[in-house]
Figure 1 (cartoon, rainbow, N blue to C red):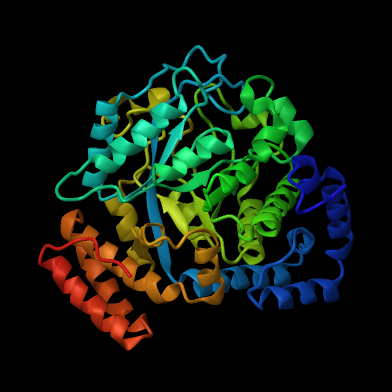
Figure 2 (tube, rainbow, N blue to C red):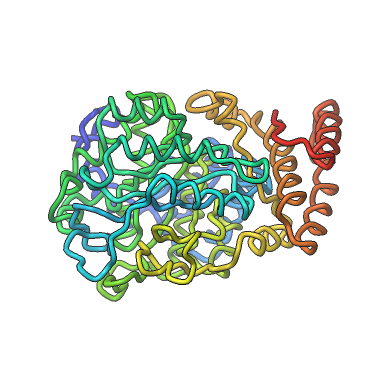
Length: 471
């Protein structure tokens, strides 16, 4: 039975509820008045239910689809402006005891070299990332209680925060590691993590069990209920996602939104981010083995519908996607992207052999400076901001500001100041010229006069060598 506030996975991700939703969507997507009423509700910027989103996803009327894309773009700008947050993944270890059939880290893979970074190697990776201009990392590690125990993750976070390079440092460490217990989440929170990220992979329990035949991750309930335990452990910024292509996309859309609704109902705050990776080639993994792999047009529409349904949530696309696809998705609601990424253990300091331990193939291989310039040329503000996390604006505090629209009063100034830091410390002359143009253009978008004056003053101080201002 479907119970949105239940602590039990099979009740807040109820298979019968999803089946009923998809049946209703097939029927109501052909009803113009119902579709129009859903779009009218979406335009109020309060979001949609999983049932309403499923109807929009099933509607194949070209005029309606154009309205969906236009509304998704409008909503993204309403909540996030033209800012795009940048980050990089940092892979600590590819040792893993799970049997996930879509991931080259699976325990039976004998062709991939196994590697785990020492704390000294982690520090070197972090220095390399800082020299590129990064301020925000997402730590990644396979699940292996012997090679990658929680103490190793905690020590690694401490190492990352301790590194200084050229007067700069990493200011926010997000963590994407296996589901764990409440006490471990408390320790992660105490270590100063930003967002705790865990992808469900697929919400279809039957398919989940086929795809995860062995290892701790094979426990569907333990994995699906992880975000509840994270919240109970104080990690109030959580990031969810599925790996699109593992099961039917309509089912996954419903599951994602039901999970978001559950977190909102039980803890008063939905997911801080939703990631939208889709299956791609890697080592012994072939996309051709997955019948539900998504074509570009369906993927693009999924992103737009998600943005309409959860307007307040950050949406992330990685370098799995090509430059062309990422460019299209930026207009459909994406607000965060990775840049200059390596998806291998030690990939930032051993570039010549970085693919040996990669979790997936990178499609967008451009260095960070090219990504920053590309964003600027499209009139996006590349943001390296970490202010909300460091000012304690997390969980329901962040969401209340975001939903009210007040978060933008500090987001644009913070984005411009972190962009200025990047331009002064790391940018090529071409990128710096584009960035200065963007800063000059965007200062007038700061509505409050005193805030604008302070921002201009701080930009001058950054030019003079000072760093790390924030509202």
